[in-house]
Amino acid sequence: MSQSTKTLKQLRKAAKLVNRTFHKEGPKSYKKGQGALLKVLSVADGEMSSTDLVERLGFDRRYLKDVVRKSVRAGFATMEDIPDQRAYTVRLTEEGKALAEKRCAAQAEVAERILSALTPEEVDQLNALTEKVILQCKDMGAHGDRKHGRCHRHGKGRR
Image (cartoon, rainbow, N blue to C red):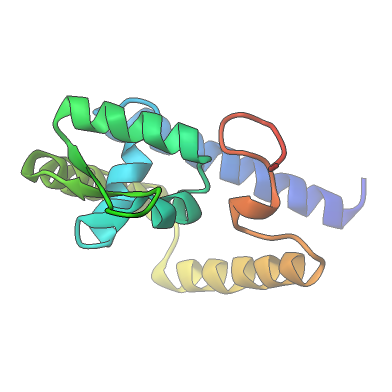
């Protein structure tokens, strides 16, 4: 196995373990997809159209509507049709805002714990190196958005 292959294998392993750590140590207060929805809404001042959410989250329209309905039933969000459009606006409720803030704080704490093994200089180096790898992958035709890949959670190509 070449040094390049070993290095990328190590990077992939680290990424998987980071994701598992976030899953294990992070907040457990959401059903499938609701965490991502509430986080995006929180960053967008608590409100977005379904069209923007589909683009931002990479969910297909049916999956997004299912996640939004679950969030509405749980009291985390409201949904309102946009007149003369096949779209709707999703807004965080006060409970949804509080939960999103709690989740973001918990994720930040987990991130701090993960990176506590590195010095601030090493974190800067890691950021610079991973950015170079990301740019090289993009130059080679890979994309970071879900539109160019597979459908979120369904494993099917886009139609």
